[in-house]
Length: 423
RNA sequence: GGAGAGGUGGAUGAGUGGCUGAAAUCAACGGUUUGCUAAACCGUCGUACGGGCUAAACCUGUACCGAGGGUUCGAAUCCCUCCCUCUCCGCCA
Figure (cartoon, rainbow, N blue to C red):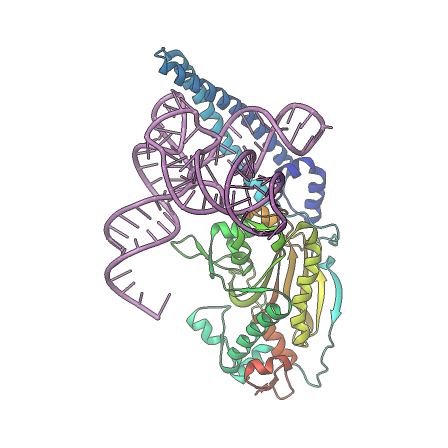
């Protein structure tokens, strides 16, 4: 959410930013609502001031035993007018809020301008593609042959876009989760959190999933609870409505959670295998920091996520998303894309974003720069470090041998009780 | 699931129709005192939005005592609905 005053005073800048995003938000409508609301509010406040002082007077006169019938009648009328104005204000504010809630974040000036993902910029490529003297199989085939991945039975017990991992496949998933958490907590200064896997609507509003993207979520019937689509939601909202001490910043948290997404509108896309599931595991990185530090922190957070790919010796590229491809709440995003031999291309495995104060305003997360100064909004960032399911895919596919067996990356061997290969 | 208690400012906690944006205490912050620490004393000490001012300070208006609605000239205080927390019993990983 953008600041209302900021929009009012920077209307052209916001209009341009929204244009670059191809947002269909009509700002002139905002201007009308904004002006109208201010007029009504002014009148309501003036009338309330009058009522307050006259009511006080009535109290005094009553105590002196004087007649206040006329004054009370007058004030009843003022009250009626106030009530009318308040009802109008409720309506105006609802429209205004709806507006403010639907305006996406303003992209940072360093974000490449373009209509869609075709304008994304590859920042760097890291790691060597492994030479394979055989036709690489995809993870579905490899997983089925090795008995570590079973999608058919998941369809039976649940439905499409779910999977069972068996034996060393399950073990590999667990090893990846632990490995990632270990690296981030031991080497990158993150504190581990294990949050609830369900959240309420307020939390989802805070990070920006609601109200606009309700269709992407799984809601629990009969409750105001949703399955988390990403750990970003519970973890960022930990500090909702709180004021953090300035000296404690940056606060860096990492969390493993499963993630649940309806994937509405992606029917027919990535239907094979683990790439696009309704449930997948992810280790998330979340950072709360001072506004002036957030772009440094974005580089650090991205680097922390990259470390995992480097240690696993998986080739990847870092991509700066263009204005047209940027998420709703993000001011700047780097995607990490890992090489998948079966698809002969890089696929997203992490998305690292700086939301500036967009989420902080929605969730009311602030910090006090000094004990005596006013609280200010923090900047929030997050990134996958990494999507575990896709990492599993990347490991299996990149470490496959000609005979269909899979080697275990060196750094994972100790997490797999010394297992060096799956065959 | 059954029964009960309660939600007030950073914390504890008073307040049952007007002079209460809210006592008191604690914490915090500034200062005095002090060899240092502590103590004592004095002062400050909510947030949001609007108006005044070039602007900070400051002055001023409105709103906010879990949320929403109602009664009233006037509500933290009375009424209704909802949410949340706690305790006991039952059940349970």
